[in-house]
Picture 1: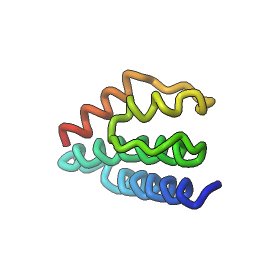
Picture 2 (picture 1 turned 45 degrees about the horizontal axis):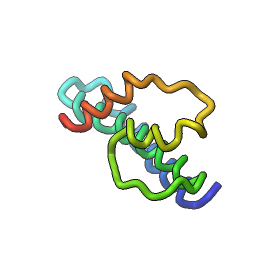
Picture 3 (picture 1 turned 60 degrees about the vertical axis):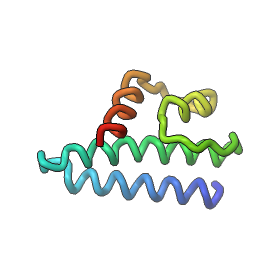
Picture 4 (picture 1 turned 60 degrees about the horizontal axis):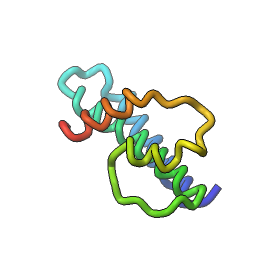
Length: 91
């Protein structure tokens, strides 16, 4: 694994850890949503880096997914990507 790939995944793991700390605090739901989007975004960017799929400057999960979908071996719910993108924009 490339160092940059690992760096993206470490950052995504930090977001996951933060979510686990604040998930039960209703007043911080917006932050949980934001960090959930970040986990997916950073994971997608890790895949882009690992497979040398080119630089892409976006936060759009749909756009990132379109770049990596051929590399994934797990199904992704497109509706969930749209929802997370909306939560990111609204946070």
